[in-house]
Length: 229
Image (cartoon, rainbow, N blue to C red; front, side):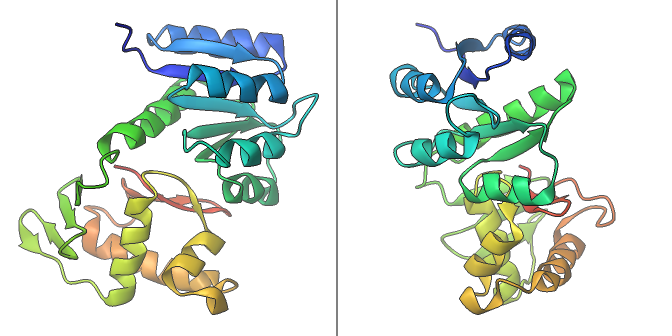
């Protein structure tokens, strides 16, 4: 039985497809390809991949359209590739359901690190019945709403805990400022990103070994935040 993680590449540029395939197969991933959006959706339905690598600039469908269609019936992790580096393009893709966004050109180590992070997301928190999340020396019991560090309780405010729980439940996805503000504070706060800066600073002080160089509560500049497990 083949247990290699299955990765679908949806990319119309043959040299980039070959580059991606070579990098992923060298890490023993099973790789499938599609050169357009329509074909990619068909392959996603038939292959049932563990991860999709999606280019936004496809010839038949815009990548956002592919992503929106895919999210209608699948929760598979999606890493978007694009030459579009404007913050609004990143936010649009993440709001449409992308889990990560990688700007071209990129190196193999960064690609593989992002792939591994998304595959871990699909395994470490796949069981919704497992209410314990651990990262670094932190343990979070979602059922008991309790946080500890090296076994010692950590006191969080209600807002701090709600923000942390939102990041945990995202399973490693990048969450945009708007998503976090809506989920943590509600619809009246969607235009107040300074709230996030303040409360993420509080969480880093309480949960990171070095708050100035966080390893888990990460900033995606101009876009949002993610929790790296």
